[in-house]
Image 1: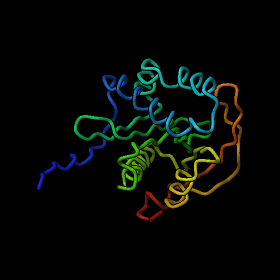
Image 2: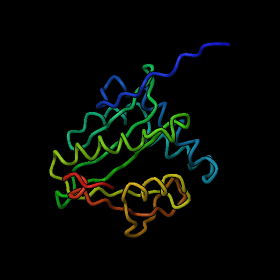
Image 3: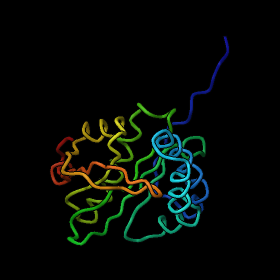
Image 4: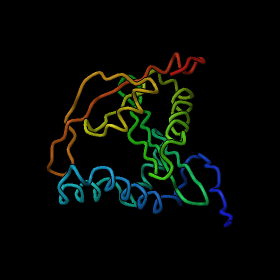
Length: 182
């Protein structure tokens, strides 16, 4: 019988500027895996070049009006979340991304990342968390519905030159922050 070491328990922490390159590599890989079948390669690469460079990740990490959380195991990024906490009304935030490595899906990691986002949002006085999710990303839609997000509309999301339809969803944070469940 062969013994195998169990993977380290994930640790979620704020991203550091030194994480930018690894975060870029992780985001590019997951974006390609998730959207590669639904998007032309030229549009996919255009979006990746604009949104997932090491420099762009460093800017997002350093942005005081946002927060980037990484989930780490064995010194590798296995998930991350990016939330933009500034809004015109000062009470809502945009959950820009939650990405989880395929090997870690189904283990509660997305929920743990969401908890980190909700905690940060609560500290900053946010009452609603909004997001957009690709209408064909059934796994993400199911997760967001399960944790309490409700669809409130749709919007066009450009991936390169490809207009795609995203579902706009919202989560009321007041009940969640006051001990309510999703």
